[in-house]
Image (cartoon, rainbow, N blue to C red):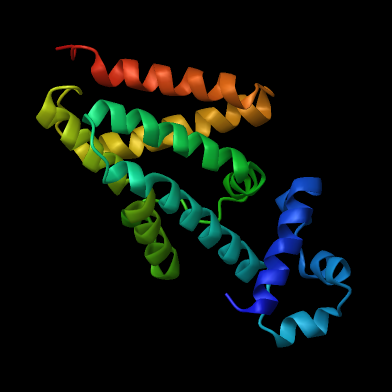
Length: 200
C-alpha cells in the first residue's frame, strides 16, 4: 500500500465508523481528503479498491493476531480458545466494515466452489486466512484428546468461523452487547459443542 492508498484507507475508516460502509464513496473520500474526485481516479482509487484495501488490512490484522497462538505450546482446546477470542477482538475492531460487507454481499466470503473469476481468487485467499488455522487446531485437539473428532475438519472450521464471527457481530452490533459479554458467550458455546461427547 503506497502513501496515497494509506491516506485513503484511513479516511475510509473514519467514514465507516461514523456512517457505515454505504457512505464510503469516491465523493465522500474526496471531501474527507480535501481532494477532487479526478485526483482519486488518477491514482486508481475506486470504491472497490478501497474496500479491497480495508479487507486486506483486516485480514492481515487477523493473521498477526492468531499466528503466535498457532505456533505456541498448549493443547488444541487451549489454543483454539485463544484464537476464537482473537477472532472476536479483530471482528470488533473491523465491525463496521464486516457488517457492511455482509449486507452488500461483495463475494468476499463466498465458498470457492460457488465463486468465479476474481471472486474465486478472493474466496480462496479468504479461506486460507480464516478457515485453515481453525482446521489445524481442530486436528491438533483431536490428536491430543481435548476436542471431539469430526469427519470433515475443513467444514467444521468453516462453520466454526462463521458461527463465532457473525454471531459475535450480531450480538455486538445488532443487540449492542458489550465486547466482553459477546465474546464470552459465543466462545463458551462454541467450545462446549467442540468438547461434548458426539451424538449418534
